[in-house]
Image (cartoon, rainbow, N blue to C red; front, side, top):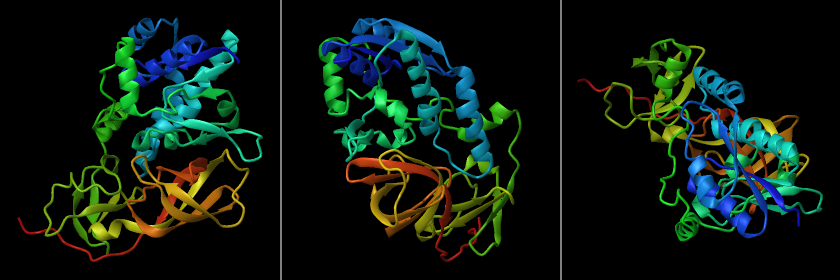
Length: 355
């Protein structure tokens, strides 16, 4: 067995237990903490001490700004809702861990993600596999990892649930055993629009809110403050609940609709990354996940060049440009891409109720 592994340690319970489990199996473990932004959790040192592994700290702030923060700001300004964790994993976290693995002459990299790996059907490569963590599974966030990254990675938590990981941490006296899970994007907090205004030192431009027929019904405070499916923050009252159906950044316009207007059955995805297969041949029945909390739904996909066309068997709610769409064959992750366009379904339009 190859015995040396570099483990990404964030200060949370998952990465600490991952390092602990590998050490228990006889691996020589090096912890690595990536400093990516001003809000980076400083608990990695304590976690590493409690597990008993050395820790290297790497300044990844320049990479994080270039690949994650700047892209996040650009996409929101263009009316899209990106998933920065996907880009961070490929471009920053696993990239830095791979570099440190090579510097130390280690054999593997590992993280505390709830994911698993398996051999592809032809045995030629390692592919991502859904873990035992149920709703906590994190393969969605890892779809864009390269085949080279997957060939060296270990996921020690692939066979565990979150509850069992916390139990292991408590039993082993790991410092982060009771540390709560992070809930928001790590560098923005809850107010994404406010973060973007501070980051760019500019105020978002107000614009029109319109119904599905294009009739003005109010003003918004800037498209960076909204995402598909949102139903608050308009400063208006309606006879029925109204939601953001689409965002037209070029016209600085929000389109609102009732709940029914959020459902669509097809979209296109670009920036395709395939790991379990070389390409999608013909039409293929798969399960597709369109956001991290979405239950994978049956669909048919086909690929033309760097675009995948997807048609769900049943309409799905709030398919959002900028979010990742990830394709599964059973519990094997085939690949994924970024949602670029959505076919929306019209519904009755509404005007704001009189105050």
